[in-house]
Amino acid sequence: MPGESKSSPREIQNYLGRISGPLLDRIDLHVEVPAVKFREMAGEKTGETSAEIRARVIAARQRQQTRFTHKPKITCNARMGSKELKEFCALDDEPKELLKLAMTELNFSARAYDRIVKVARTIADLAGADKISGEHISEAIQYRSLDRQLWT
Image 1: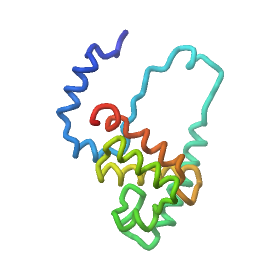
Image 2: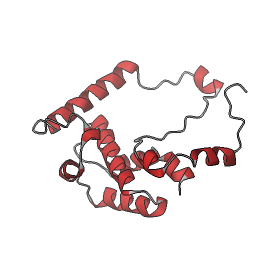
Image 3: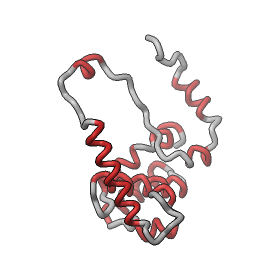
Image 4: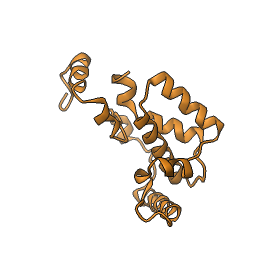
């Protein structure tokens, strides 16, 4: 099949092993995108329109601009430092425990922790939520697939 990898999982893992952990930690989203089956493309089921997604993104960016009004050097969640993470991303018990479990079980680094919280804050913003929930943390953890599959 065209575009399909001829490499074995071991060869892929060896190749990815050349990428340092600290470099990988600096990548916010690691997502595998499997091939879409014909029946899914030909089906009648549709997702959000581009216009709907655009509206959610604009609303999320406005939330962030409002959040960082008094922080001129911070323009979006990705730019937050440790101080801002504590200020704007305080976690209730459920999301905190979920993140603690993931950190322990998946052996995430401190940098990965920060990235997960920032991505969860963005997911919450896209959902129009004021607080980061366990669901937002779970989704953010899922975006660390290379950490989960190849580096632990």
